[in-house]
Length: 420
Ligand code: EPU
Image (cartoon, rainbow, N blue to C red; front, side, top):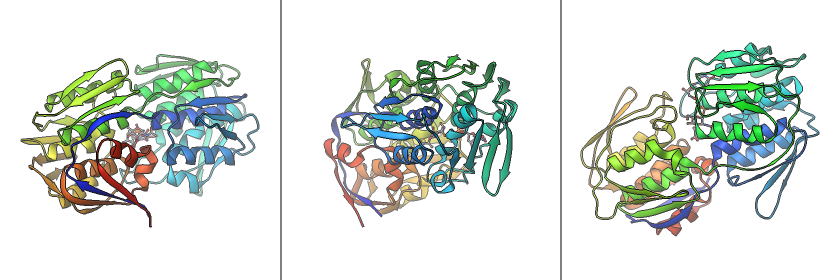
């Protein structure tokens, strides 16, 4: 299993291009199942979750072609299987996103039930309930969700009990070919939801209100393929900015949309960073400035994202003062705390809150990555640690960060991947 060896401390500086968004690309890839003619996608990040998605679509009969510029053409005109097997679903929960498109276009779907994962139990009841409200008959049998809508889905008014990103995306995809109008209330407003809606609208769907909490979808009879460019990854961008903040460095992330990161940039400023943006770049300059601990509470977009919680926890761990981080989205997203403590961080967990007492320095240690964002936070911690840090089980990081060691190396970090 691959590991990363990082020798610190480092002061990072330079410019880094940000890849396409993983969490936008995954639903868009699954959304290709809705198209009767080929779709070509650009700015799709080269990640393990993307490879898993392509594998999943290929098992269903989708023809996948990648050109030399990594543009991907997907032809879903001859889908022969409507099943997402457990082997693929267990490695990537986002596989559940095939359910809406399959049910909408073919009136049937069989998807292995995703189990719990490192960050919590993560049920999919809201996806299932929403599709039932649209007329689907859904049974759970031997670990599979078996959904049928022989007469097709019909529009419905659905109020989701809590804000769910993939739940909103799955229901949008279920509704685009349903008969009549669907209204989704308490919808997720994340930029990735907006990107999916823009993509589907480009293919001929009629979706209004994406980016607000009420989304209206008028069903259409068919969608046709388009060329579409995926939005930049706001969390990847935020992660490199956090790395600049902890090392008192200066980093410019390019090919980004700063409007997607407003709550995060506000917190960086509150922590003492000088943050400047252009239309598609963000620079965080921490040179000669001192980092102060900040209080954060994770909430659905446009508030502070849970996917940046771990990175800010590391910032607090070496900042001046005490900080309070409250995780409200996932019940178990603090697996990185024990690993950070091995590196000298002082963190007390109290329910869903993590209280830090900032230290001047961390020290290198052998640590284990437990989930994607936890892995990122351990690498950030290693940048400020004195000595060598070995981050084990980095397959998590390959799910979500494109060429991470190459990018950090470019910023001046002594980082090496060891394969075993
Ligand atoms: N939830 C339910 N029932 C459901 C669906 C969700 O109870 O049917 C709960 C979840 O257990 C959680 C909360 O609702 O407590 C919110 O979860 P959500 O459904 O929004 O999360 P998700 O859609 O499974 C996506 C991202 C995550 C990101 C969250 C929150 C993708 C592929 N994943 O997950 O990304 O943390 O939204 O913003 O888009 C990551 O990239 O590292 C990652 C975990």
